[in-house]
Image (cartoon, rainbow, N blue to C red):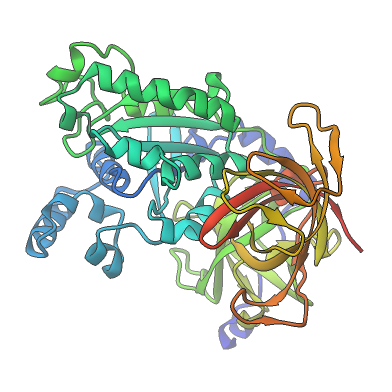
Length: 479
């Protein structure tokens, strides 16, 4: 804390209105180099080749040095995992490399001709779905990677497969645009019939999940071989070029458009990570928190309230893509370095907001949910894990209020006894203290808002026994 005393916090340079005006000008959501800014979560079944694809893409774009490529190749071969050499660019944790799977959300930046893409490489293994949810809650768009190998696509798309669950999750979390990379086509000799079979299976499912066909793009690729990633004509691309005349993966990603941003709404900054400072700026000391601005704007020198709790902090520095910036607006994935705060009060899932317009706290609320393809029905009293941004909280379905018509929202049945698969329903959720394995009598409260007040703060997911069972929106906070 001594460093906070030695360095007085900076003063705010602009009024909030001026920052909003600057954000509007910069917008069409452009970054400092004139590119549009967008965050992309990479999803799909385990072993679909997500990390390999992104590692190879980084190299093909000239954003991985040859020295680093050789180092990854040498180290992966030494470990007997030569086929993971490209994945090691994204999977840097020792456990990830040992197990050959992505565990945590790995964040990086891809600079495309017209877009600065913040990449959120999500784990595909079902054990790490909570980490994937944290990444998806920070994304504007999704890249679904599916394995074209015979039997492997089917395994990922079948009940219990992560391709299916990830699509439902990202749509439930507000992602409305998706690019599908049909990967490993080299393993099926670039079969056009196989590509079309996969597309014809996925298209109706994506529509049913809520993705508009106009915001859905399919691209055939071979990630390991580097085919159809950046250039159309590359070594080994002849088999694909015989029938594919469409765009490359980079063309598809560079064409993505950022969604509208609620910059004029009150600041809401859900914390996804907390760490000791030491950023690129000389003033990046103290405690750093990273996450995505759900709404509003924030600037250096601003005083913010931390909820839950009765604590405030001052923004000492803002870092965006390793650059120090004076302000940031809704939709940006940034790191804030804070002063005048005890780190014990900063937790993953806490929300930063203006002291004059704080986010509400609630321990019970009414939600409208869609029940997924579950085997065991939901009853009153069902224990669940509630996911809200990066927060995971024990909760109970305290009341089943009504089942609803999915198209009109009209009540079909009041006070139903159970909720079965594919049902739309209105329920009351009540948070519990402790953990699912060790509950306590003291209920907890979390920062949350109705969907009508703030879409980003009003989305929830429910899981039970390692399975996502429902997703929906908050309708009303209970007193």
